[in-house]
Amino acid sequence: MKKTYWALGLVMLFLGLMLTTQFRITSEQNIDPTRLRVDELIAALTDREAELATAEERIRALEREVAELRRSLESPSQAAEMERLRLLAGTTAVTGPGVVVTLSETPEAVTAANRVADEDIWRVVNELFTAGAEAIAVGGVRLTSVSGIRNVGERILVNETMIAPPVEIHAIGDPAVLDASLKLRGGVIDLLARWGIKVTVVKSDSLTLPPLKMSPSFMYAKPAESPGT
Image 1: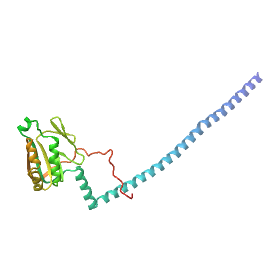
Image 2: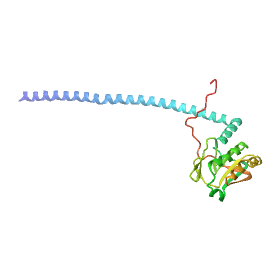
Image 3: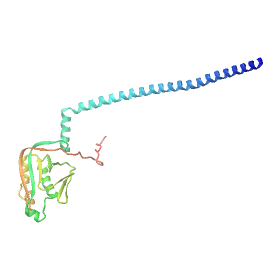
Image 4: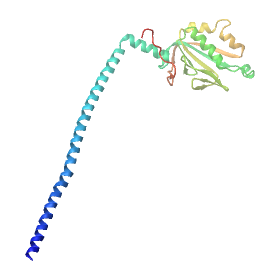
């Protein structure tokens, strides 16, 4: 009986030692990889913080460059050039003296189907530009070098805006010169009168032309490189 207890005791002691060893091994297996993973995360976080600091410094450097460029554009000569370009592009409203030209249809014109058409408007617009008009709007739509005027049924499409007779054309320039150019004998007014289209011209000391509703976009035209660059 005693031998049985001793044998059982030895077996229990052996099992205890085995369980203790297994627990140490399992604990080490559970802790070491975790510690290793934390170390890796800390190292990665440190690297990311360094990269972020570098990126923030680059952003501050770029902001300083942009601020310097803006200050350089504030010089009188460059500011004047930018204003001139905005006027040419039609992206800003303009005011000044000029004329208001109205094209309307007489009863005879309507009967003969000689309505105000895109080509009639272009004749007047071209004459005004030739006479020195610096800005023109047709039916309240600002014209630029890429503007379009064309017939759409009984209406007229100016850029993306539909208008109908009577058509008003506002032109900024020397009122006396613009008025005289349109009223030349055998000129555009006399020509349109033959087709039953009445043209009136009113000089004004102050006109205001709106900017473009949408700036034109260019898909194919790009600035050409100057020779030697």
